[in-house]
Image (cartoon, rainbow, N blue to C red):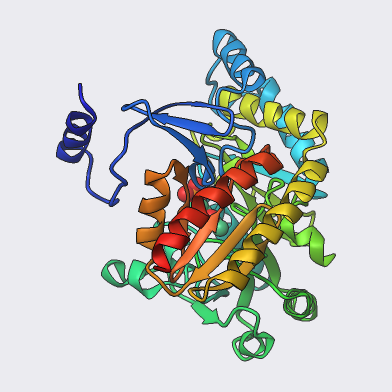
Length: 397
Ligand SMILES: *Cc1c(COP(=O)(O)O)cnc(C)c1O
């Protein structure tokens, strides 16, 4: 079949919920992807901040194959070895007490919301509790996750959403304070906003939020689905601020391609009991074998120092773009989660970069998002910068 035939078939049968780029990706090797026309791309998207250790990673692939031959699924009515290991390791790395594995980031958010509601219910026996979320946030597309996602465009057709959600301005502590009532059960935020346009929280904001939560017995939920798992140069982005959440959600790079997420709680927020929550697949042996291998890879390769080193270099290269081109307004981000705010259409830049063999994605309003695999080298950064320079030079003509 030709590329065009694959695309036609996909468009005929896949529900058209995405305007996809007109390439069909067939295989990957390290930080490179190959399409069905044999064209090679340097990957600065990682399947949306997922594939941290590169494609065709033999160790990862072997671990999954080995688990497939033992047992793939058990349900949560029984114990399984990989889930117990993965929960212990993840809890220890995160400094949290309990882990609930899910199949996606969205489901981790659902669990976090339910945990917050249950916590408040346990206190006063009422079911009218409110959640404060942030404008320009992204937490997922299910009704609960969508309800705390600060993007009116995503919500409009699907109302009524879950009740009791209020939106504050990110990095504006007063706007949060103004929304706190005795019914507030949780504040949910991304330490670095991803989809919203790569906005890191200020230290003042995140510490102020923690204080508000402590003073009012409100649970703090950090959504680390995109910014967690080493992406920013710390295992979790909140470590930059010295502030801990009561509940944390992770997914994306947690399974590095195998669909798995989790929400974690501290002792205080470990309130869900049998009957409160469940999942058929969540934390099955295959998914948690992937998590275990990902955690091995983090431990064995000192990946965080590597991320920090290459991220410094990447920041220099991106800052040079800001200096050089008027239409590159600003660089924002931490570690290998970077955004360039443009004043020319980001969609065109992405397509032209793709023509030159570089895959990037967008975020928020006209932000070029760079979330490469965590294993990229300075040479890969140079290659990216060369390709992007060629695109920007065209644009500045
Ligand atoms: C991607 C993302 C989600 C949703 O995760 P899915 O796995 O797509 O359900 C939630 N929150 C943040 C911050 C994300 O980046």
